[in-house]
Amino acid sequence: MISASEPPGAPGCACCQPRRGFLRGLAGAGAAAALAARPGPAAAQPAPGARYAGLVIDCHGHYTTEPPAMLAWRKRQVDAVNDPAQSPSPSALKVSDDEVRASVADRQLKLQAERGISLALFSPRAGGMGHHVGNARTSLDWSIVSNDMIHRVATLAPRNFVGVCQLPQTPGVSPANCTAELARCVTELGFVGCNVNPDPSGGYWTDPPLSDRYWYPLWEKMVELDVPGMIHVSASANRNFQATGAHYMNGDTTAFMQFVTSDLFRDFPTLRLIIPHGGGAVPYHWGRYRGLAQDMKRPPLTELMRNVFFDTCVYHQAGIDLLLKVVPVDNVLFASEMVGAVNGIDPETGHAYDDTKRYVEAAAVSDADRAKLYAGNAGRVYPRLAARLSAAGVSP
Image 1 (cartoon, rainbow, N blue to C red):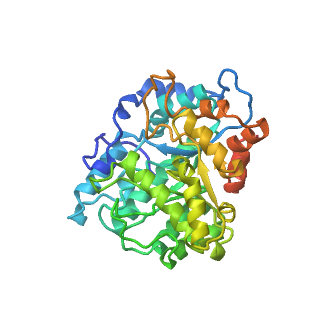
Image 2 (cartoon, helix red, strand yellow; image 1 turned 90 degrees about the vertical axis):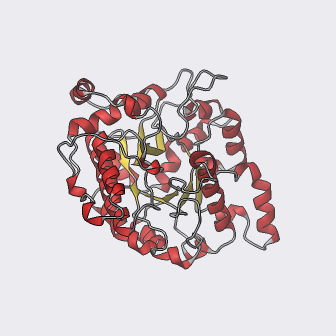
Image 3 (cartoon, rainbow, N blue to C red; image 1 turned 60 degrees about the horizontal axis):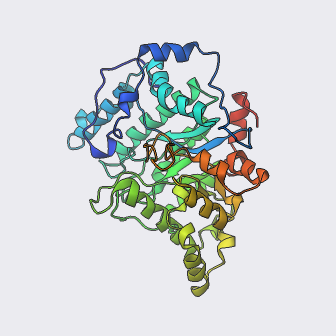
């Protein structure tokens, strides 16, 4: 466990830098004290005119407002990549509980309450995983630090956050190297899932496809633990691919095509994988993928969708409408990725781009389907979630 405090700093590594303005929102001691004094988490209120007032689970949240000391620790680690003796140990990070509370008070908790989101499945900053940086030891230490911080957030605000872990991936290193940290996070820290980077090289795709037996030790452990994985790349080290606008979409779309062309789910019939950001290009080109599967004598996409799910991190109404028209509702989980990829206000609507609940509320789906999107599907895909919610006193 990480505790106490250390002088703040900010890493210079591009993959670890906070997105613009994040740290400006970090609360001071007064905000932390106010949060600590509250009798419980802020009650999520439905948006005006909402037709659904039950539990709303955001399956895609990242810790993008990390305490400055955590970012300073990462900078020290990155700076020491060529001199491992200078690299800090995970235990060297000192962050107080008040600092942890303050880090989520003015952003995540505030926006959850304003937007009617009950809780988030919370994982380390995706762009900060930086699997292309350093070696396997670098990745393991950073994953331990990151996952321990997620655990502290979820412990301090158990009705608002449930942990999802970062894996210690490294280009060219077998995913079997990730299974011990995954098991620790699930069995000791109570996490309900993990993020899987299909391209640890950061945009160069040097590892085998997700369907290759290279990945099987990780899939086996996920099946054993009964946890799903979100297929999520990290920072781009290739200047041809801007991270959130290109590399992320490339990763989503590439992963889906790897599934279409493989027998992965024949070998792992209970493996569940979530492709975020609305599935990348997939819903828009659904006919292409159906046709390609047919031409290549692959099973129809309906069979693939027994194991593959998308989320609603799509930042305009037409995109959400298309997603819900093309992809079966049972395969879509509500998500916003706040505070994450797109933080601005849409001048056409006057609302935040990542306020995805507004789009789901306006979508032409039944109330029963909306309930699936908001909570029912997450409960099926993340079977360990029910026990976490029950322990925190949260019920549908």
